[in-house]
Image (cartoon, rainbow, N blue to C red; front, side, top):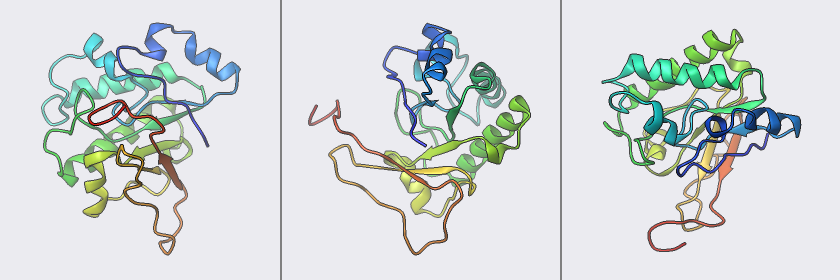
Length: 189
């Protein structure tokens, strides 16, 4: 299921024009959000509406409300929901490598998805993107629920860091690929 991630630097497709998601749906486009923008909220929306720290342990209740608002806004539009969390500004998460923390984040997000939509969470397309340091959670043994798409990433230089193990049991969520055809950042753009 291909989906589009709108540009995030200084913008929010969903917040800048509330009709954008409906227009995408009218054209049959499945929308999602980038690896650093969970629960259908663009990264810059935190700058606009966030309160307190972008830190799950220190600001749990506000983050839950913030994420629930993103899912409510998504409504019934076909979407792929990003789960997990990176640090604010596309940086590593605080307490990086804490598998218990990341598992609590994903479990909480899935509870929000079920509560807000009223649907079986396994029927809502979700993706966990193993970008940069997030892959260390996978490497250290964390697994997202079976119905969540595991999205493998390149190293920002066009080299795939890892690919699915074809001898492993199949996942109902399957796998995705996040590959930079063009990367704007350190060393090259």
